[in-house]
Length: 276
Ligand code: DGL
Image (cartoon, rainbow, N blue to C red; front, side, top):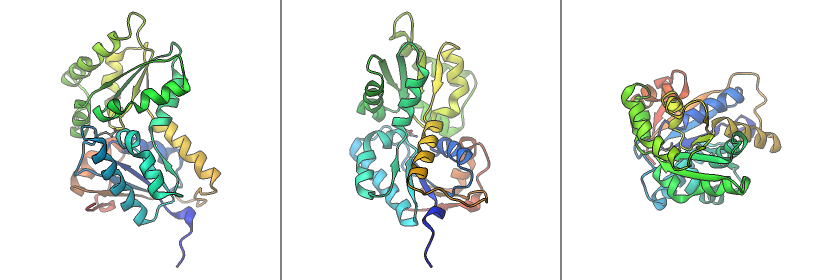
């Protein structure tokens, strides 16, 4: 039986549950699309690994989704987008592959008035310089300072998203970063890791009301919508889209921890454990 390409799901992957913040924006903007999400929970975090390892993991995750039959691949992980987007595009061409770095950089350039942009991300994303390069290409006069905040990933995965301890850790990372900009300070802070939006409240409190927080979830969803239209791939069904999940570690933990990131319950029956 031949499968209508438009009915195929959009594949989305992240190192863990962080990419569910992007899936949330995708399903809100594209409610009739089916999505198949893969969280490489057995190997999270990617952000402290070498570029070689992240590329290898990303190709394995992408390959598993391609095997399931997807019409587009969304790399809902800044670390994997920053270092492996070209490898993924080459490996799965002509499948459209969308990363989150470019949309995140676009959101930052739109938000910033004074051109002073702070970026927080994983070690690997900061070291690779993808945000710095992409923002500079769009906004040549911008001053960008990026800082790795690796503890945020653990806090987010653990569900520790608010309270005194979280705010103290956030302040310990952000205050010195903001001070590096000098007196005027940045007016925009990019959450350059898909795990960070669940810490939005604590980060906003430390950043204060002069700094706009941006992440790539909504801009990525807009990019996906535009590409679907360009390639005549939107799902034309009137029915609500299906969400299914793959996790490389325990399905139980994925559904329990993931719900906060997705902003809605994840049914254990919809999560399948796989080995990459
Ligand atoms: N969610 C990943 C990202 O956006 C980072 C988490 C990790 O270190 O694996 O970079």
